[in-house]
Image 1 (tube, rainbow, N blue to C red):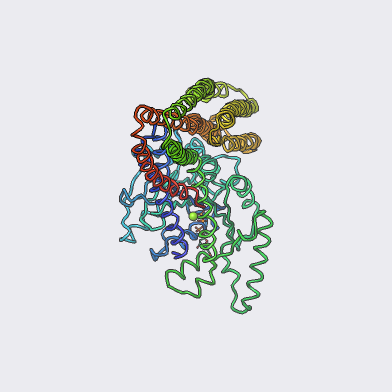
Image 2: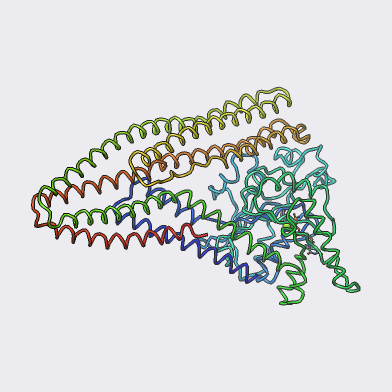
Amino acid sequence: MSAQLQFEVEHYRRWRDELAAAIEDYQSWLDSAGEVDAQQSLRIFDVLENLKKDRLVLAFVAEFSRGKSELINALFFSDFKQRLLPSDVGRTTMCPTEIFCDPGEDPYIRLLPIETRYRQESIAALKRLPVEWVKIRLSPDAPDEMLAAMHSVAQKKRVSMHDARALGLWDDKDPDLKEMALPDGTVEIPAWRHALVNYPHPLLKSGLVILDTPGLNALGSEPELTLSMIPNAHAVLFLLAMDTGVTKSDMEIWHKYIRRFVPHRLAVLNKVDILWDDLKPWEEVQASINKQLDDTARLLELPRANVLAVSAQKALLAKVRGDELLLRKSGIQAVEALLAHSIIPAKQQILRLAVVREIGAMVEASHQSARSELAAVRHEIKELVALTGKNREAIKKLLDKVQADKMRYEQTVKSFNIAHGEISRQGRALMASLDSEKRADMLKKSRNAIEDCWTTNGLLRGMQSLFDQATLQFDKIHHHAGQIKGLVDAAYRRFHEQHGFARLSPPPLNLERARQGLLDLAQQTGEFCNDPLNIMTEKHFLIRKFYTGLVASADIVFDQARSASKSWLSASLAPLMTQIHDYKRQIERRIATVRQIHDNVDTLEDRINDLVRRQTSLLKQNQAIDSIRDKINQE
Ligand SMILES: Nc1nc2c(ncn2[C@@H]2O[C@H](COP(=O)(O)OP(=O)(O)OP(=O)(O)O)[C@@H](O)[C@H]2O)c(=O)[nH]1
Ligand SMILES: [Mg+2]
């Protein structure tokens, strides 16, 4: 395993842990300042939970036999000194395999029987039902047992054509499936639908998750993989092989599943050792590899720097044997460097921005509040020092002034309450339109209607119209959320302009991502409905494929929009409310102080000393909050 990659992943993990520690500090600061409300606590708790659950998913996707499993072995599992994942000619990996480390449990491989495809639940839902999985314990110290257990991901079974069809794994008209048919009329299908491997490995312990996939053209049959697992991966390594060149089906996979859907894409041209030729000068070999890389970058429309040549097989061999020269020749170090220097920092940035989105405004408000408190105390000290040696008349004047300020504050609160009432009312209406039970009900009705369709054409029209409706509904929600945001912005502006509050920005509301997700799905629905293979698929299966794939993904998009709106609504006014609350506290304290002095001029010096002490402690608080703020905003 590369020291560089290990270093970067470890660095990333440390940064994440420090960020979590800074947020915990912030939480205890809030607690000690007595400023925390239930909503804010919950938000901080959520952020901390998400930081703990954070994973960096790296998916390996390609047509069969391009060397995905071999590359994973070479990149991550050479310390095992053998081929951990089965890698062989022809189709080898038969089910999507997630490899991660959960130190809370002993190493295992859990396998989901292919028969679960008969049921409605998604793989994501089945992950929460351990009884549905076959679990094999792994003993990393017993290599033979390990290999036998890992071989499960390549296991196949024979079933009748009728069963294969019923499982949605056989279609008479699909030429890609022909090779699965056996002479006796049975069909070879994968024995398992999904595999989860809990393996103790330092990189995986740091939160890296590897997703090995079976040759993709066979994979269209597991929509969850292509619609959710691959698009949700943080980066995809797309493999091509030197022995086949870039084929039509490679390009199909690239366009259909990767190009538009994954933010970080690397292409790896594997098996370059085929070009190695001891009778040719190395420069000549290198030039021909470079030409292939240029062509590939152009074909895939990728930056040239994201396309690399490698020999996974030689890299694994070199690592097992400790052969430095071969390792360098294999090209794997460039893949490791790219992962270390571009993918991991990009992931860090995404996570940091997510934290800023969740609690950035809250930390900013605390920062403002600590500063305004300090400014208020400084101002009071000045006011009181100016009173030294003055008569009662002057003190009375100050008291009147402070009381006038208080009246002004009360006006402010009145106008805030009106704005708050309106925003809450609109917020409730928005949440009602995103209600998940209502949506489930609507989907059930649509499914009944679609199942009643007589013709395939009618069926496909029904599917298309379901997505048209969903897009329309989302646009309405988007528009409504925009209107509420307008009200919130206006409230902030008013307090700044009319009441002299420090300028704060409300937390941003971001439904753009969900909207883009839905647009992508709508486009995929169009493709789904025009796919000749689907037009010929048996109706019952087509409907199930549509609902467990596209509709389930759209449902997730709506859920994302719902939880983003919910947390935004509860946080949108919080910074302003904190400001108002701070102002109230400051003004009441000022009145009490001036009144005391008014009643007894001799207490003036004591009050000044109190304030100076308070100023010292506030300075410390300001420093603490600044350091938390720096950590969260640190690039
Ligand atoms: N010459 C050469 N052969 C390789 C290289 N990498 C993999 N292979 C061979 O290519 C074949 C396929 O490799 P796998 O790792 O099983 O490919 P895969 O992409 O995981 O294939 P599926 O699991 O079927 O989707 C095996 O026979 C490997 O030994 C390489 O760098 N050079
Ligand atoms: Mg494989």
